[in-house]
Length: 99
Image (tube, rainbow, N blue to C red; front, top):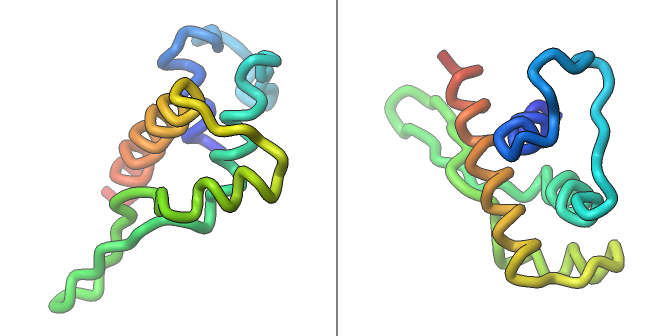
């Protein structure tokens, strides 16, 4: 889950020299990471009709509340902001991987 790692590195929660096989998640980040992971199949895609190339463009926010309820996570403005930050980092990682 490179996108979660990028999010935590961006916040300074993971040192640059930390073992890449170990990802520590602080207690106050568990809900955000869990919800983001659960939303992993809920991406909107843009498909180029001429080339067939597909690109993720955004998470489907319309299902976020339902997913959060199903996994017993209470949404808040701070949690939503964390999800958006992870989404942005994930989109960057997906774009880099497509090159």
